Length: 295
Image (tube, rainbow, N blue to C red; front, side):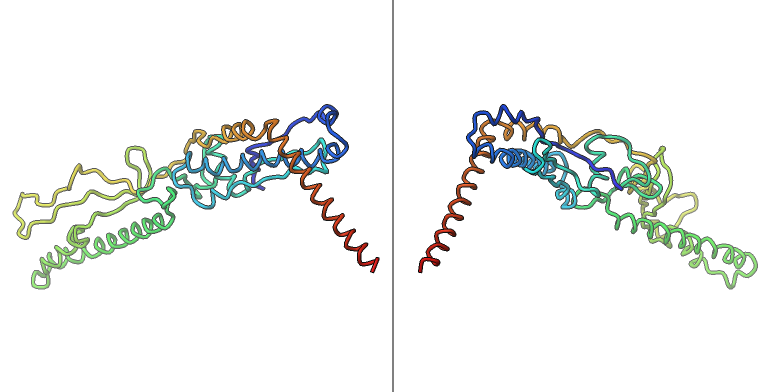
């Protein structure tokens, strides 16, 4: 089972006797309900601040991440053992743990591959994540190039033998078509390997088009640019993360704003109004019932 992340716990050790000393009988009766409401309001504010904070701490968080938080509600029946908490759902916790606590992500961890961790991608999703479709297309492109190169390479010995034994059957044009530059129509190739210690998919440098008429000793096909391969997607054994999501800040802000005597008073007042409304409705029902009986 995935580890549960408890991002925020809004709880107080209530001195029940001290807090109830100044209350009337109704207030003492309503005290547990008011305390639960007070704690739940802090948890709601903390959760909302965390949701808003995702947009500040992350670049374009997706719906999966935005829906990460849930509240464990304080219950009046728990009396002095009541508490409210903001939790991260199990699946989201697998990803957010690295953003909250930092640490090292390795192969098999959430967001990583089966054998490697994605360290760079030339193409990302709109939320900044690794585009798995792009990875699949790179793999297909790499396999196709390997197959094409093997096919071209396998046909060359036959042409060499034909040129050696029967010049009447040998076609120079056919030989030129079996050069990789001509066969690939000068498109840049792709390979999977390690360059400067970084493993991944790389695109070979682009080449200029060959001259229509070749001259002995004159090189007409040259690399375009700096003659270095372009990194398309990189993998590492592990990637280290620094804490990014400021959950502790959002919790402290929720306590600062909602954990005050003013909001405690509002919670108690809400319960008094709620009780008064229930009393009025009960009295109205009893009066209606009495009126029916008197007819």
